[in-house]
Structure formats: C-alpha cells, structure tokens
View 1 (cartoon, rainbow, N blue to C red):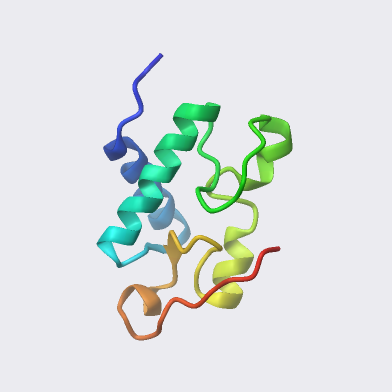
View 2: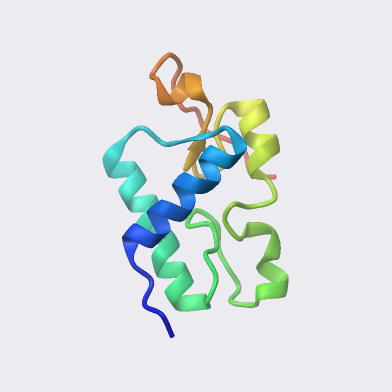
Length: 105
C-alpha cells in the first residue's frame, strides 16, 4: 500500500480546484488543518472523506461526502465556498469577500 503524504493530498486538491475553476482556502493554517483531516480520513477509511463531516467508514454510505463531495459545486455556487471551506471562489481567495458559514445540506 502506498503511503499517503500531505503533499499528495495537497496536490490532488490543487489539481481538482484548477480543473473546476475553484481555489483553495487562502488561510494557510486553516488549509493545513483541512488537508491533514483529509489525509487522516484517507488513512483511516481508505478514502478521503470530508474532514468536516462524520464518516461512517462504509464507502457506499459515505460516497456523497468523499472529497470533493457531491455538495461542493452547489455550495460554492450559492455561498462562495464548500461546507468545510476547502474550495472557494476567486473573490474569497483574493480576500475581496469573507468565507461565511455554509449550512449542512
């Protein structure tokens, strides 16, 4: 089994953000904690479940909360960020607006 590194998790998130026109959270400490949570969950469950949601450990049950979760796109479109604020719009990334809480879907 390949060891999951924090750099691998970061690169995957950055590539996904670029692909879909999003940005990663601009707060370095907050971003680091999210990436560490994704890494920990991938080591624990075998898949990168959202670090801000409670995973069951069952892939089929958790499919909708595997990062990037099914709710990311509608959350970013409506609120400017996904639920955990890993992915944000450009205006939030540039500090033109603040990241605000996103309600649970």
